[in-house]
View 1 (cartoon, one colour):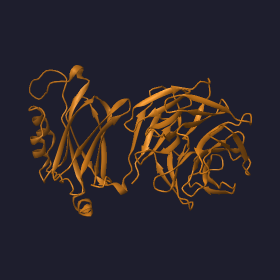
View 2 (cartoon, one colour):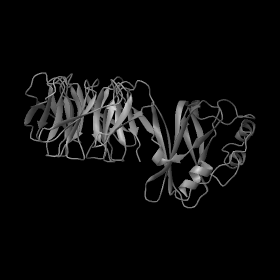
View 3 (tube, helix red, strand yellow):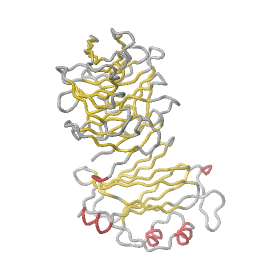
View 4 (cartoon, one colour):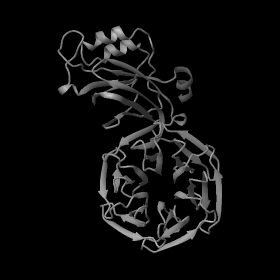
Amino acid sequence: MKRHYLKILSISFLILVLLSSCGGGGAGSSSSSAGGSSSMVSLTVGGSGQTASLRIEKNTLFAQAQRWFNDMIKTDEVIAGIPSDVSRITFTISAPGMTTITKTDAVSGQSSITETFSVPNGNNRLFAIAAYDPTGSLSYTGSTDADLNGSAVALNITMTAASSNIHINEFLVPTATSYPWGITAGPDGNLWFTEYGGNKIGRITTAGAITQYSIPSEDSEPWGITAGPDGNLWFTEYGGNKIGRITTAGVFTEYSIPTAGSEPWAITAGPDGNLWFTEYGGNKIGQITTAGVITEYSIPTAGSEPWGITAGPDGNLWFTEAVGNNIGRITTAGVFTEYSIPTEYSIPWGITAGPDGNLWFTEYGGNNIGRITTAGVITEYSIPTAGSEPWGITAGPDGNLWFTEYGGNNIGQVVIH
């Protein structure tokens, strides 16, 4: 069934956007929203072979809007029905600085579903649809963007099989120039991240709601962060030369690193029940117990400048080498292996174990998200925002990858299937 829709019908999902306009209620216009700041948007998915013009007539929000669309749409584009393997559909509308709007509908034999939303006017509003099968797996997904300014707009989203599509969402951090870096999944079901410029630890829910906590030490310059085996979050203080701990209630504790000027960067929970971190300035890999006892190990390669580190699915620790342009692996016995990244000067920074059994990392210089298998095979994916300067990355509780954009001041999401 899925192949039939993909190859024959191309899974075209029509979005009908009926917008309120500013001004009076004469012919060719509809009543405006309060202050003209929002538009009523009707999203329709599916159909049973009706032409676009027929679908518009059946789903008009305002009688006057029908005349707009009769003039605008001249083609007889056929709308495919909802595939039989779809059990629920999620609508998502988002944009930088806008609260994300999400609605999920159950599907039980319907040929189409329509939802209406009040969406703030503005540019680059992202309209996305995700369709799931009865097992909860993502079957189809697609998106498009549009400017909402009071004019009528008709948009089409072409859905593709989820296995061939990766979509990235972004959420604006409240503090300007916060420079988010490290990010990790917390034991409370949220994502936790560091704010290098804001001197804070942030928390973001999978719905995009952000809370911030100030670090006791001034100018601590927090970087890496990870969930510890003790149910707390552990992070590095690049400027403070410390390892910090924060509970999910926001209580802080800090531990000084023996090597002066070690410049700790990333940190991860190891397979031995301890926390492991990189020392960019000290050229070492550090270990700290949950009781705060620190041990340091010198890296054989001089000037490797280790940054990101994570525990891999193979029981080893994996880390990035910014200057060496490599992904490194170290066993708990101290044996090193290095793998070269295809993109030159990619400047790899953050790295995490993904839900697919691979390691995922950010390329600050390459503006990519990279993936490496435990056998050392590397694949790279481009980030939509140019110059986003991705830093930290982690696997989220929703089964996707989440990362920070130092230059873009965004939180990014990689949807994998």
